[in-house]
Length: 107
Image: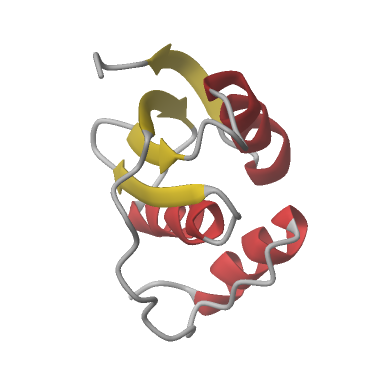
């Protein structure tokens, strides 16, 4: 079970205002750009879910998916608003996790 207090603390720190119990959002269009990040600091599935909730609450992030065992986070974003490095910096500073590598797949 996901710890709501953990996710709410991460959302508050990120300034997204996203609550763990927020309603399902309508489908978003396919991302214009996608980046894959290798992230250190995932200790459990709650960490991965918390990061995804925070990322999905940011304007310009169209999708986010985390794979806990591999420490991999895939983010779809609008390149007019974000860059690989901007998202990496956000993950490093606002969430307490550390991006060890940015992998940008061919588009």
